[in-house]
Image 1 (cartoon, one colour):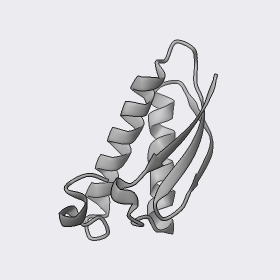
Image 2: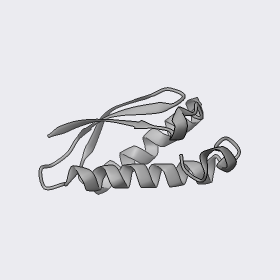
Image 3: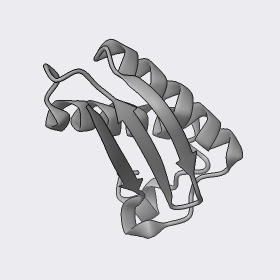
Length: 93
């Protein structure tokens, strides 16, 4: 099964740069591996990312999305603290 996901930053703020998008793709691939899923395509812009994920039927899409959003947002905030201003985003990415 395939799913096309679009994740948008809080308030559609343009926070992503090329380095952040590359790291986000690495994180997303790792999370997909944990769910026995495969990230087929990844693309992003300053305020959103697109994912095309092939996943097995035994995986609930809601759990996959929850993990993808949670892990990627947490790690991006930790690694790029200067770029993601907590005052503007209220601690969310």
